[in-house]
Picture 1 (cartoon, rainbow, N blue to C red):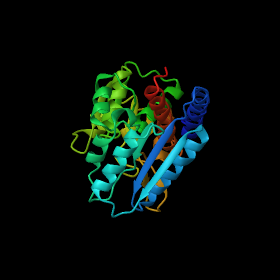
Picture 2 (cartoon, rainbow, N blue to C red; picture 1 turned 90 degrees about the horizontal axis):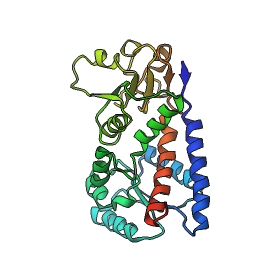
Picture 3 (cartoon, helix red, strand yellow; picture 1 turned 45 degrees about the vertical axis):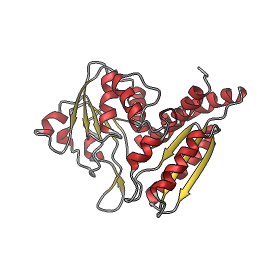
Length: 283
């Protein structure tokens, strides 16, 4: 078994982005990212801090808008519209989840597709579906980089994606399909789950259930990617995969933490760089 080091792969992506950013600056363009956070959700606070830090590392311009819990939909919408028009800002990211009185769909639909560096806007989702896209959602794109780092060729392999969320599961399946894998998606209503997961050469778990994937659900020699971020019975961070038992069976596996997590932010940096190039007609 080999551990897939998300921190190392992420650092390499950020290094590449930093180099390209330095080149862009020579033509007078600095990629700019605006991050909006509403309320005091502690996990969201951590994510936002990490995004600010990554912007700094890559040489980007960044703005953070920390709005109070009681922000109205109109106030949030007005901010997004203003950022859409701001030429210094190439990417707009609204940290989810939003407080329950706010409609995240409305906010996502308001962000200009060319500034939607999360790739959640229906225009970008449709582009991913047909395989002609500017941006990829950060987590699935990060997973593809991790698989690539193993040297395993996805072509013709059986890939099983556990979970059908709009943020991870569905786009993940599409990216694997574009890479010529044969893809199956499982979810809470799937019959014979174990039989399906055991047939996977590449297994991506994104269901949000601590240590749900056990060794008897995994094929010998499979590549296992754990997107889950949960707490176990002792309050310790863990993924959707029972790492200690599963690691003996697979050829490659991502740890939690230190696997998929770091990739999400480096792919966001790559998307912001792409957005800056597109908006300034730079190839």
